[in-house]
Image (cartoon, rainbow, N blue to C red; front, side, top):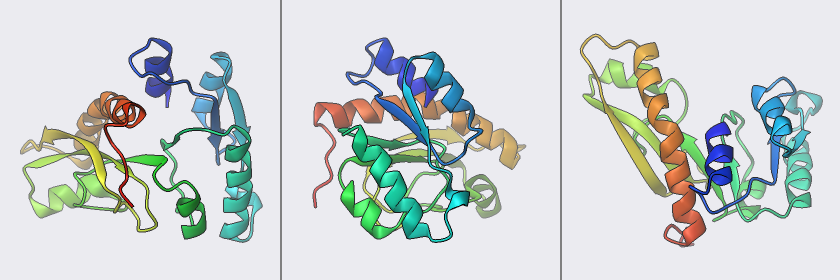
Length: 180
């Protein structure tokens, strides 16, 4: 999120971050956003007994800002189909694998267990099926023989900031669209 805010501020991405909304009241990004003068909101998922109620509250908060794009960054909640469909073609996510390989969690360990020689990250359109939306852009890193899940995760993360900003600019320019 911080890399996206900075890229928008310095003109690398022709967009403005109008709000940062988190489901985690202690997320470090909230403090950063506030320091940048960006509106922040917390919709704490632990305050909801039903996932759809959380989705409804989150959607309500997002819609107050009328964003052109909804970017998921460090957001580790599965969103319901109704929520996803409301933002279909306007919501993107970053995932630490070369999708369609390794959707879901524990991607780095899964890559190592499989003996893959290349790993990376993907920015994709969010669709109702988890991590299955069309890929906008990817970055690759080579898997080293002595890699651990942690060392591999760190190398993938080092590519994610520029990858996400590049993918966002493709979306803003209209060069990446979800064909539905």
